[in-house]
Every structure is written in structure tokens, then in C-alpha cells.
Amino acid sequence: MGLDARDLALKYLSKRDRTALEVKKYLELKGISNLEIKDCLDYLSECGVINDVGYCDKYILYGMEKGRGPLRLERELLEKGISPETIKLALEKHFGDGGEKKAALAYVNKFLQQTGQDLRADTAYFDRREQGKLSEEDAVPPLSEKEIARIGRRLAYQGYHSNVIYELLERLRR
Image (cartoon, one colour):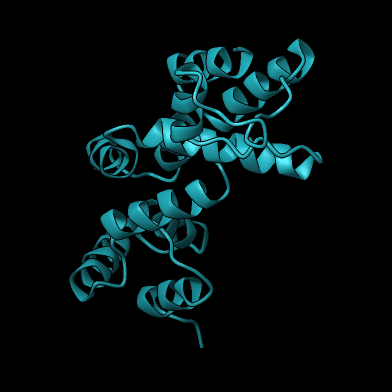
């Protein structure tokens, strides 16, 4: 006895959340007709089982935990079939108002800690350093140009905008 489109889709969704496009492709591979797929996707959307907006938010939060920037997350979500408008709104929600700079700095701190260095830097640290208000205990040895270039490459790979990368690297050089 073969499974119908809804059963196949629910089984596919039982392992993890998926986008409508992912479910559609899966059902196509299983030989389900386009009409049945459309009906199934409509049903699953009405029931709230498939929610591309919610998926987008969860995916961005997960990506941010992994240190990913908005460019990489946008590319990955487009590949998963999320609409550009939905992605734009979700990225503004999570990375807007200086959020990208904070996320990039958090990624750099985490990366340096993993390599045995402790920058302990946040925006307040940089502000105090630039104003000459750091105590000797707070001061961190400067990074070499090689280390700074490596950080820049990592940030670019993770999907941060170049202006954010350049600004952060400039602050690291001072």
C-alpha cells in the first residue's frame, strides 16, 4: 500500500522543519502529481506545518549561533526556496540597527578564543581604547597583520558585508 502525498510529506517533515520548496521537490521525487503536491502544500500551510516565515526566522537564529553573516544566510535561504522579501524582513529584524557589527565582533571573539587568544573585545572595549581610557589590565596585545588578514577571510567566508569587515579590521589594527 503506497502512501499518499500528505503522509509522505508528514513523514518527511517529522525529522526536521522544511520549506515548502523542499517538500515540493521531495514529493516530485516520489512521483506525486503536481495537482496533489499543490493540494498537499496548501493543506500543510493552512495547518501551520509548513511556515516559511517561521522557518526563515529559526534558520537565521541558528546561523547566527554558528557565526554566519547575513550574506551567507541570504544565499542559503534563497537556495531553500524562501522568498527574497521574507528573507529581507527577517535579516533586518535580526541584523538591523548595528546587529551585524555585534555579530561579527562576537564571531571574532569566539574565533580568537578557539585559537588560544582572548581579545575580550566588545564595542565598549574599542570605545575605551580609542579614548585612551583602558587600564593596563584591560589592554590586549595587538594582533599581527597575518592574524588580522585571517580574521578578515573568515568573516568574508561567514557572509558579513565588506564594510563591516573593513571597519572591524581597522579597529583591530589600532
